[in-house]
Image 1 (tube, helix red, strand yellow):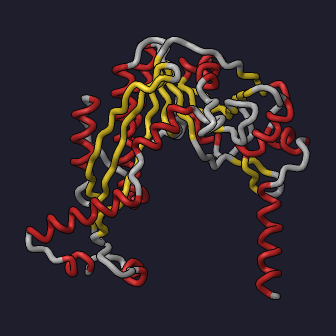
Image 2 (cartoon, rainbow, N blue to C red; image 1 turned 180 degrees about the vertical axis):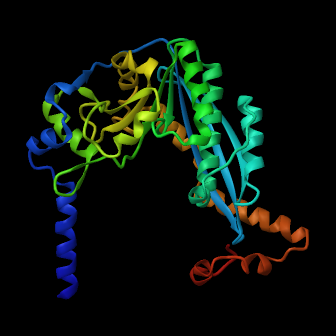
Image 3 (cartoon, rainbow, N blue to C red; image 1 turned 180 degrees about the horizontal axis):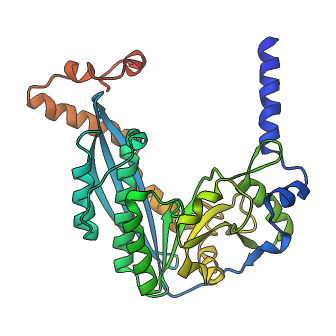
Length: 343
């Protein structure tokens, strides 16, 4: 009975966060107006669509260092016709004392940038995330090199909240996109943006409800410039705009979209092209090229296990026993070990 009461209280709490009751408070608190929601009219175009994504898996946790396998790349469509996938695999050693040369080597090789790479001490626990992000920027850069005027380049993620070590990288990416006349957009599958109504409410989710009420027969987009949303006050460090967009009227979700300023100037046109190719039954309302990029690039659990076993075999040939490798494993992992060889 006590367990049921706890679950009931928890269900009420979750309901407070996800239920949307009316729009008056939303408009008042966020400073969004009904007229801020602009319709999207899908429009075909003759160009190509490039979609960039990344994936990573932990191969070994050696306590003082972690060995990660990282895969990034992009897929290319011309209209609805699949063209190709370009995929790159990397191994990254997340060692807080020796991480910098790995970043610096890739920055110089991929972008011609030669500077000392350093992260704040508070960021060192996220080394593999930073390195994966760098590899995704390399994929964006390579896609832009191939793209032509009027093409779409879609990045799975955001651009607005710059991480200082990558400012020069993103400046270079935005400059090339502008010079070539390419529509570069960052589309995020999730968002922590919130607004206040006594509790922190999910902004993208609630905007989806409001926008769909206003424009039930259209996709739409909403510019967040000068809106009262957290954490928008941190987004002033870049030359661009952040949006919420719904690409298909029957879709369940809207997405955060980041656009550099040269793309924001023609945002309606850019989104009309995205919306035209967001009507697949596999992922209604999400750009199909990004869906395909996720499928092509992701590292499955089975593949990760195979990689670990192959590396164990190679270590065995070098005289390193599996027992020794396991001795470095976090004890939580030891407690969860099942029958058969595992890490």
